[in-house]
Length: 204
Image (cartoon, rainbow, N blue to C red; front, side, top):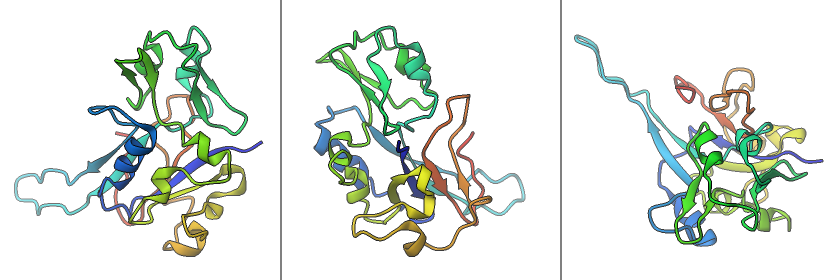
């Protein structure tokens, strides 16, 4: 059984939003809604007499396909569910648009499709990864910051669009120091974020 996820090298992300645009086109995401977004973290405002900080980075955020997803726990119809590959999906035929899942998500990455009256979010391009392909955001990441793989095989085995692995392509990183997750409120987010030589603020 796999545990598919993304590993994101924040040192390589340039905030270009190519992943956002590719996702919207591939999944026909409505105007004004986003399955993924890119946040700028920092720099913090300097205090009096302090030198302005240059400690900032870009943080791509989307559904984290959690190991213990809160959205699945609160869904009254079973529309939100986990697949054997570790991804969290929504069965639109069962969704009643109550938005309990959206309210329970710690990351604010679900939204109500007003036209269809169902909740939507990142599927990790389930229709593509089921055929051995990469998620569209990985394929279109111009900075080579996004990598796809199986957590059970280790982060350094995650692969990019040309077949290379993150372990062979990216700058070395210490898995005990440089690898982070977003805030864990008991949901155990699956996506991994690599950040070297910066102050990680993804949990704030």
